[in-house]
Length: 79
View 1 (cartoon, one colour):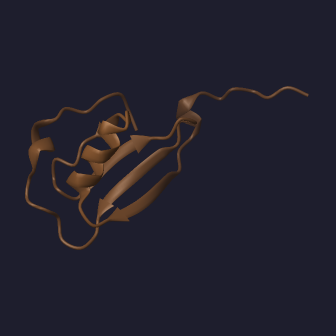
View 2 (cartoon, rainbow, N blue to C red):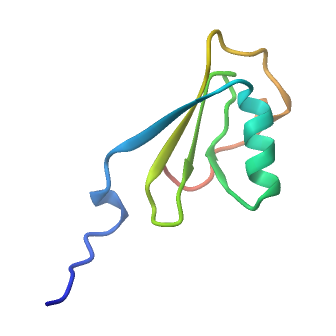
């Protein structure tokens, strides 16, 4: 019995995670080779994709942080 590939668009659920410092978290992920698909330009939310194409939402715990070094980073791919 085979499996059918429905493509990336068939995966619509996201897994949200709250972090203490969204900029530090994104920097650490990038240093580990993770692509930040939607950078935290607003200091509040970012998106990455897992190796199996699941969308992962990274949220700043509490109030948004002031804009950091990733504020001007463009989107990459889709999430």
